Structure formats: C-alpha cells, structure tokens
Amino acid sequence: MKPATALASPGAAATPAPTAEGRVRAYHQRTKHHLQRYAAGPETLDWDAQPDPFRRWAGAVVTMLPLPAATLAQGESPAWEALFREGAVPPRPADRNAIGLLFELSFALAAWKQHGPDRWAVRVNPSSGNLHPTEAYLLAQGVRGLDDGLYHYAPREHALERRAQARAAAGEGTRLWIGLASIHWREAWKYGERAFRYCQLDAGHALGALRYAAAVLGWRARVVEGLGDAELAALLGLDRDGDFQDAEREAPDCLVELLPAPAAPAGAAPDPAQWLMAGTWLGKANRLDKHPMYRWPVIADASAASSRPQLEAACAGVPDARPPDIPGAPAAAAEPAVEIIRTRRSAQRFDRRAVMPLSALARLVRALVTAALPWDLLPGPARIHPVLFAHRVEGLAPGAYVLPRSAAGEALLRSALGAGMEWLPVDGLPLWRLAENPALAGTLRTINCHQALGSDATLAVAMLAEYDGALAGAPWSYRDLLAEAGLLGQVLYLEAQACGFNGTGIGCYFDDALHELLGMEGTRLQSVYHFTIGAGQHDPRIQSTPPYAGREEYAWTPEPSNA
Image (cartoon, rainbow, N blue to C red; front, side):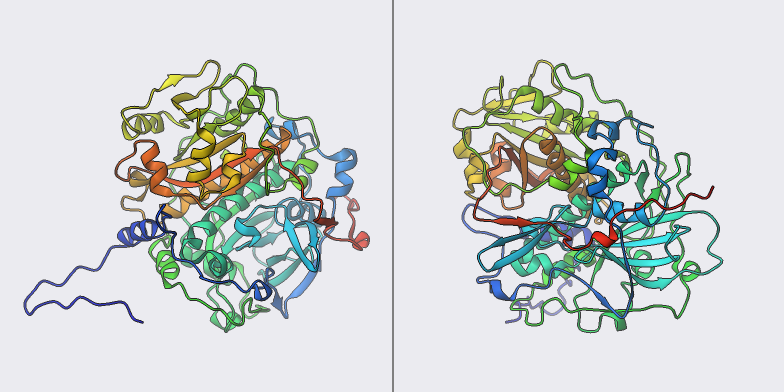
C-alpha cells in the first residue's frame, strides 16, 4: 500500500521538500526502539534461507593469501602492549605475506562453529548478528608478489579477487589503501529499518580491526579525508551497474591509507580515471538473497540523504597522544597481540556473579580516552562519550558514570544531562559519577530490550553522540558518529579480551528511555550504541573447528628481501 499523500488546497504554498539533514534526522527518530513498540522489522524470518554471507566476484582472477598468524603466535607476534609504543614494532615489508597477515587479523574467518546440523563461520571483526555487511577492497601498488590493481577480499577462501588492473605508469614505490563498503541487505534481512545504523557501526568495527592489524605489522593507517561517495564508488567499481546486474549493491563507506614506511607521508586518494586501466575490469557479483521477503525503502533514503560529497580535507590539529595518568591502571597486556585479536569472541551470555577488578576498569578507561592507537586513524575531535554503568566493579558503587572524551564534550554533557545528576569525581579515574542505582541490574535489563546480556554484565556502556552539532549542515556526519561508536566498541572488545573478560555490542536498546534515565531533553546528545562486558560463558553444545583447515600449503614463508 502506498503511503498517504496530503492534498494541498488551490493556491496553498507547497510543502517544502525535506532537506538531506531533515531526512537523516527523521530516519534516526523513526528507527528508535520504544518500550511500547520496536522499530519496524520483519515479522518472520526463514532461517533456512538466510542471505549468502560471502560476496564473490565470478570471473575475477583469484590470488590465495598466506596464513602467517599461527606461526607468529608461536613467538614472533609483538606483545599487545607493544602496539601502543611508538617504534616498538618494526615495520614489516609490504609483500604478499604482509597482506595475508593484514587480512587474517582484520576480516578473515576466526573459526567455524557447529550446533547439530547448523554450521556457521565467525570472523575476526565483530558484526551485528554475525551478518557482516562490510566488504573490504585492496588497492595495491608496488607490493612484492602481487600485481598492481584493485582487489576484493574473499574471507571464506582467504584470497584476493582482482577486479581491475592498475596502469603501468601509476608511479613508483608502494602505495596501499583499503576501501570499505556495506551491503545493507545483509543487516536489513534480519533487523529491518534499523539496519542502516548497524551497517555504520560495523564499519567502525572494521576500521578498528584494520588499525590493530596494521599495528601488528608496524604500519600506520589513516582515513582519507575529503573523498566523496561517488569518487570512492568509482574507485572500488561499485558504480558499475553491469557488474552487479540483479545482485545486491554495495554502498561506499570510507578509504583507509596504509603507510608501511615509518616516515611515509600520507597522500591523496588515487584518481580512478588515471590509476585503473580502462577495459580491465573482471568479475560479476553474486546475488546473496534470491527471494527477499521484505523491502525497506527508508534505508535507501537514509543512505542517499547521508551521502558524502567531495570535500576539501580539513587540516585538523594533532591531539595529545599521551594517555592520562590513571593510578592503578596496569600496562597493556603482555600476551601476543595476534592471539588477543584472533581469539576475540562476542559473548552470548555472562556469569552473573563475576566482578570486574578496578584495575581492569582503569585499563578500559585509559584505552577510550587516549589519542593513540586506534584513535590516530580518525581525523577530527572525539564526538562519542560513553556513560559507564558499573554493575559489579570492585570499589565502585553501582550506578552511572560518565567519561567525557574531550573538554568540549564535557561542557556539552554538563549542560545536556539532567540537572539532578551528581557529577562527583571518581578518585584516580577521569570519571564523574552521575547517580547511584542499587537496582541497576533491572534497569540495565529493561533499557537493553529486556536482555540478560544487560543485567548479567559487570559493566554496561551507553555511547552518547554529539548529535546536533555534528549534523548541522553535514548530514553525512551521521555515518561518522556511528562509525566512531563502532570503533569505540572494537576497542572495548579487544581490551576486555586482554583483561580476561568478554564483550558484546548491543544494538537493541530503548533510545528515549535511556535519554529519560539520564535526564536528557532535545537532541543535542543521542545514544547511538550500547555495549556490555562480563565473564563470558561458553556453550559446550557448540563445537568449534579451525577456519582454514587443509590450507597448510599456504602457510607463511619469508620472502627474499631486496638485498
């Protein structure tokens, strides 16, 4: 049924078309969950007809990648704490082995799981509902063992599919970029209209996974500023209608430049018309869902309204990269970084009796406020500020604590949160206690869509975005806010793992009920992501097997140096 249309009387002024910013705001408001009702989603799901979780490009040239992580974990991996010390990890040469490790630690499969007749893959990078809408592309020049060109990463095979060849005159030296794109239908199949939010959060997870993987290689990484969606789509081949035909389209997210050399200056994104060789495109996209049961046109509208234009890159100041002095916060873990990254799992349930040591909380807090890894990836100031609900944290009364991540953010939080908030400093931590709540377990379960993952956690997090200030005149910033929140979630995932705990992202929460709990009015701040941390409990009925069994022939072997 078509939506009703208002009829204007003769001579009446026409209703102005909503602006892009207005459409983005309308989408966010429309897709809120409420205590009385949930955002629009499918009424039924056919679990036997889920979309294919793997995008492939039929006809593209396939290059298998080595699997170095297992070898590195046996003694060659840098310690987790070394990733955060500048110069502590010597940069590896940009060869095919390094590319294999980069993807193995960011977008590869982590394991195969099986319960009865059901078998599914889990990946290194987390995703809402394990649906993985994010696709990764490599643009490579001057990589030993790899032809110059554009590649799509195929995680099931741990392989690269070459989509286009680069021009021979592309230039000398090594240049590397990773492009990210989202298949919105992967999330919409299960989550309906709210799925566009989750795709952006997953892009943030992917950015974090990529930055940590680059750090293991001793490489730097930064998001390319100013690049418009149309330019990125052309660079990644996402605007080639004939290559998709009836397959689900991909929406461009962002481009990340990798800098293997310690002093390599960041450069501009390549011009696809000049960099990629005309007439060399290969591959047709596979269709993921041949019989979709629903359509959610509001997602396409939100995507179009938040489309990023080509902009002049801003020269943002470099923030102070020194973490604050937090007494009692232990140094980062000495465990191999490869193991922490590869063994991260999203918790399915928590031990409701577990208690988090205050030292673990201090380490989590430090990781969220430092300007070092992985926050050096993003341009601009922090615009996401977590509210920590300490449920069972040693030495802290149960209640809400706020962690401002910038001076401007603290000023906004003080003015936007309710007048009844306490704002009491927490000794030794850059936290402010907003309110005690002895009945926090029930509150957390209710706010997080009545899920036990909320009530059983030792620590819960609600991420507040500087909403009005970011969206004013820049509707594409909506995506940036969600991606920053997803990056925050990736930090929590890995730091929780390093502390001996487990985390899980929570996209289902009651938006305005949380705002009311914090005394928030208006839209200066909006909650955009929730997260919980606790002692994860394993389900013994679920079997786990290696992700790439039988791939020993592609194990890592050192390639000869130029010398």
